[in-house]
Image (cartoon, rainbow over all chains, first blue to last red; front, side):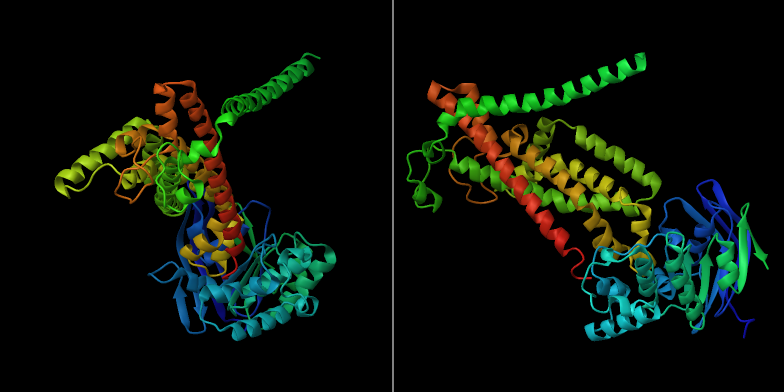
Amino acid sequence: MSTEVKISVENLTFAYGDHVVLDQVSARFAAQRITAITGPSGQGKSTFLTAINRLSDEIPGARVTGRVQINFADGPLDVYAGRYYLPDLRRRVGLVFQKPNPLPISIARNVMLPLALAGRHSRARKLERCEAALRDAFLWDEVKDRLDRSALELSGGQQQRLCIARALVLRPEVLMLDEPTSSLDSEAAGQVEDLLVALRDRCTIIVVSHYLEQVSRIADHGYRIKDRKVVPVG
Amino acid sequence: MSSRLAQRVLMACCWAAALLLIGAVAAVLGFLLLKGAGALTPELIFGEAEPLAALSGRAQVFDGILPAIVGTTALVLLAVGIALPVGIAAGVYFAVYAPAGLRRVLSLLTDVLASIPSIVVGLFGLTLVILMHKHLSARVYPSLLISGVALACLVLPYIIRTTEVAIEGVDQETRLTALALGASRLQNIFKVLLPRSLSGILSGCILAIGRCAEDTAVIMLTGVVASVGLPGSLLGRYEAVPFFIYYTSSQYADQHELMQGYGAAIVLLAICSWLFLLAWIIKGRLAGLAFRRV
């Protein structure tokens, strides 16, 4: 099973205007594994993630060429070919940002937001999925009595797990996280790491990190981004 | 040593500039209130008519400025009502959809529109009336609707610019949050970008309200008259407070009439304050509702 490739990136070039961030890079991400991407700051690790779910399309001045293929359960998708509805791609390839970014609404509404945006679920179903996602993110026991309270009242670590729950509520096949523990203390970071290991069976996980220790603790595979290139490590 | 001195001088200049501004506003308001307070009587507003009867429309007001107050309020609501949706939509287009090249051209055109003197906008309204009168219907005359449309053109650039700048001011991470969760661009605009930009849009709206309430040049050419009573329809002529102030101050016959001009100026300020308050309350409501439907 370990040989099954979920995402393959070929000759991807990413530029902001004339500034080339990634130059003809290729990489493969195995299904149901945690792959870490490391490298110095400002070298395009986060940029690389936005090329996979085409969030790059929404960034002014960003230009991407090359090929990204994702082997979804219902068939492969050539991300940069043909016309399709981009939100569908982003619903299947979740992205958690570096800084926890809950919206100024209640905990429950935050988690249900992607379902509301996709707009085809009853309230009862949304609540059910919300609970499941919060359980998956190891957060349910801490928030179950205050789902109606503002998400901004949570601690940093809780907010980050809330954001992970929010990304999980659509049951994505791929989960990408951009330095998910960089703004957390070591205990909260440990919880997030345990969470990722537990999610591995369900998703293909790509995690950007510059903590090498963390990478060796949780990742199955690794890539390093440096000087506009992506090279495998380990 | 000298740099410290320079810093102190600079500080003093900043303070002086701020005091000058506040002083100027206070002087204008004080002068108006001092001069006009005496004229603030029911007679100024209702003339000879009985106030309650006039308010309920049973009695005509001849010598008071009630028709002008109603006319100005209707005009401002109409013009801002036209300019707001168009301006917000244009601002969203500039900030979210427009390709860089096209955006530069459109931005330039917006600046040109903003720099057109209001008398020229008035002429545009008049030309519009003449064209429509000739080619569309002989029943088209200068009216409240035409003034509203012309004033909307006048204030459109403010609303476009403030909307655009407010949306651009939303940081990239927030811009991308909902998109990363599978929101379409349209959902992102309505659920994230616009709610986050409400304060900026409101300031544009307030500018627009003030501009519409005070403008005399545009309405003089497009439908305002000195005496016609309460505005009866969008296609009829109307009275307006700034026009009343303008012609009272230019051709008053005695001290009493001049005092009425001062009184009307205070009333105009009150109308503006009331409209600002209304805009502010609406903004508060919208901000509360923004994520409610999520």
